[in-house]
Amino acid sequence: QVQLVESGGGLVQPGGSLRLSCAASGTIASINAMAWYRQAPGKQRELVALIRSGGGTNYADSVKGRFTISRDNAKNTVYLQMNSLKPEDTASFLCTADGRYWFGGSLRPFQSWGQGTQVTVSS
Image (cartoon, rainbow, N blue to C red; front, side, top):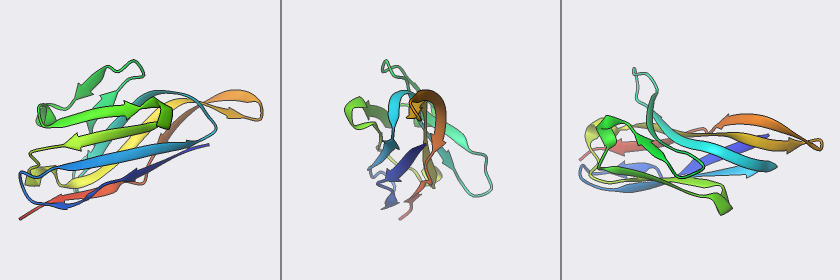
């Protein structure tokens, strides 16, 4: 299968910045879209940003102009640069990816999720 591991979360003051990383590993043949979601206590999981294999991106309105998603296809890694962080950005950030992987000599589709990395914005 394909595993995703996030890193880069932590505690930051309002107005500060963090950079999240998510690396995919396994017998990966190709990755289509990679995305970041977040989930705060008592709230539904929401899409933060998405990047397609061709580089096209989408952002939640609440993060436009503050967050930037990017990917390194050679490293199967997606990043989320978060600037001008606000207390309401506090959440567990999870990455997801879909694509195809090799299993027993054949290609199979996958969609995987990471375990999440906590981002806390507080003074």
